[in-house]
Every structure is written in C-alpha cells, then in structure tokens.
Image 1: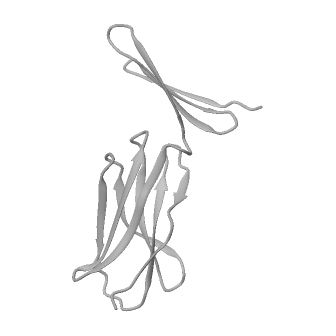
Image 2: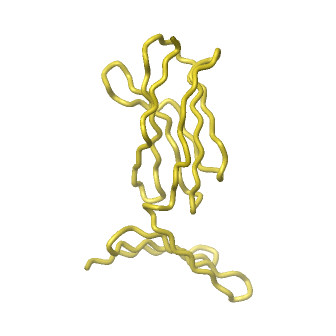
Image 3: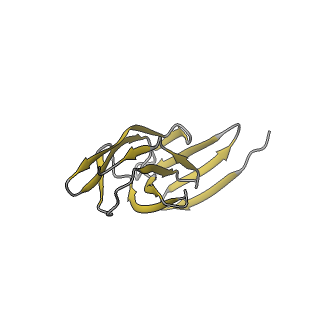
Length: 137
C-alpha cells in the first residue's frame, strides 16, 4: 500500500492529501484558542450534481444546473460539441455554494447541439456530466 502526503502550513492551517486506496481531502484547522478541527472528505464523492438541463429560449439555449459540494474548491466548465465532434469550453464557473447556476448560449446555430459540464476537483481530477441535447428549431 502506497501513501503520498503533501503538506502545506500557513497561518495555523495545515492541509494534506493522502492517497490510500482512493483520494481524500483531509484538513486540520487550528484556531486562536488551541482547538482544532479535522475534516475528511472522499474527493470522488465530494461533488454531487443535482441536475443539468437545457431549454430553448428567445435569447438562446439556457443551461441550468445545481450541485452540492462538500468542499468549495470545485470548478465547472460548460462545454459545447463542435462540428469536428470535439467538446470546447464556452464558459467557466467556480463553485460558490449550493445554488442554481445558469448560462445562456447565444451562438447562432440551427442544428442540434450537445452540451456537457466538465467538473474539476481540487486535485485536478476531471468528471463529466450527462450530455444535454438542445436545438433552436
């Protein structure tokens, strides 16, 4: 069994990552009264995408989603499939809490278009949502 630990110490806060049969975020925070709090999160299970949908509007395709993260270090990229079949980032959002996020794609197109969310965890891991197929027709 291999263990890899990275330590960072700054202003009485220490965070480290341990890779032991999975990836975990473990943070130790010490306050001014010498009390400490230890938080452990399974990095893979730290983000839950509640929903991701697309609807047609007069202004374009409206993409809406909601997530529930245990840590606030996640990011979202909205990706659209281009004519070559590759997904291209068209917007980026940082996780700001359990709220509904919205992006309007105003690109003028007539064909059906595929979208997906690319979710990036604090360690550089990438996860993709289900695909959403939308059309202006």
